Image 1 (cartoon, rainbow, N blue to C red):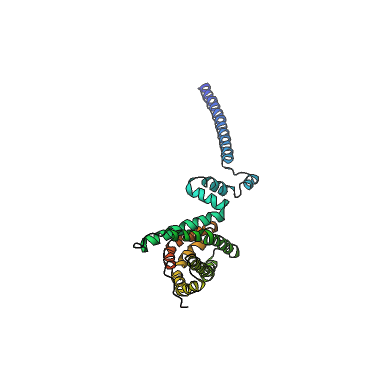
Image 2 (image 1 turned 90 degrees about the vertical axis):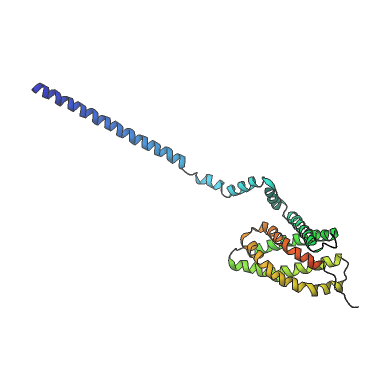
Length: 250
């Protein structure tokens, strides 16, 4: 009985020793695995060094846009705006003015037929005068008033209505009248008759377009936005320009 008791005690002692050593091994193995996994996860999720980050400053947007600029017509157009802004804006405005005059003639000149010379005049005005002037005007405003807050936006709108709008409309009427053979007195009489009503109607149309343009559109796309709004406006404007000249008593 005594020997069997001693045997059981020795066996239980050996089992305890083995269990303790096994648990010690398991615990160390587990902590080692956790630490190795943690270090591996840290390597996987760790951010690049500041040196590497500095090399990417500003590059992802430019790389993205340069990649997207090679896809489709819009990308091609944006690339042309960047490489040749003046000529691209002039051609765009010319096409929009030609399309506006064509639409205006379809609506208002059903009986008299289509006047291709008139459309060419409008296209020439967009290419030679309005396109370049829009390029210069929007760049000037973006440099002199660079902020995008509400006050700055309203300042730009006011400048457009008080300065650019009257000047461009005066040049438009004078250009078309001169190419139709009107004299200086007839051009002045036309301006007295048509300029003020056109500007009043423009004051009801352009402020909304100007607000969207100045507040939300990048400066390189502002002439395109302006010309897109001008598609509707020019239908009316070309109609006004096509009115008969004012008779001047000699």
